[in-house]
Length: 381
Image (cartoon, rainbow, N blue to C red; front, side):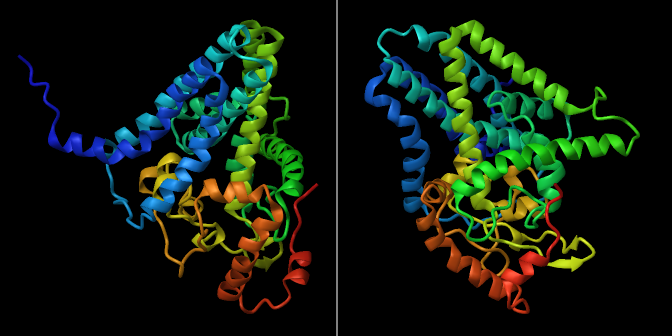
């Protein structure tokens, strides 16, 4: 008979990756909320925002760094969770759209609040996993990223993130970099408009460099529009107008969740302008780093954002963390910081002194930041 025993090294690889599989527990929890209704609907934001904040306080920081020479075998179980999530999310979102409008035990308010909770999940986990997948080179993972983003009607995020954000992060040409003293409720409408425009412009410019019009079939916006239209139609077919409205509710909350994260990741940070529209190279100091153990499990090391921008091709298991001498540190993990961001005076009270300390530490030669920021190259209109 064949030997089916799991090799010790394979078991060790799986056990190391297992904490990052915690997010999959949100799928059955979502269904439980739908079946039970009532107070249980509050469990989705409670778990993602508050439980992981509590776990961060209990488990503390993880300052260990993985081996950068890890093989594909070492990374298999880490990659698998991001691939499994895509069909799991699709079945959950559209399964609920088929079920919820006809569930007699759920009132109108319960249905809306349930799909707001679903939006917290598709925004916190789904968009984050799409972010990991879009950075990979193989077509399957990039397609999976497009499917996740289309499910929240934010497909252009891939173009904006890869072609604009990574190139212009911490400069005025990046819509997603929150300016110093800019409250989230001013940032949010600005970034909704500017990121869509900058993403479309970036793709059109890439085609123009090949002497092709923006209407060329290779423009990924046609794929984005087709996928989004397909999901809207599917929601309408499965759940009628109620299903379509609930789909739009989860998409809106997911986008809100994403932009809260975008807001805190680079708030107030600035790359030095070298003249002639050029900026210094991106360094770990141009993103806020967070080493909080539990929320990094939930967010597959997204909080090691300093290393992600420094080395964008690294998969999430091998992202490195940095000390205070190399990268600015958030005082709390993303769950706490995104909740604080929704209260601008509180967020500024926490973060503005840290931004000022960062300026003094890395750019002591710049004494008038107001004048300096006015003179830098703005984002093209």
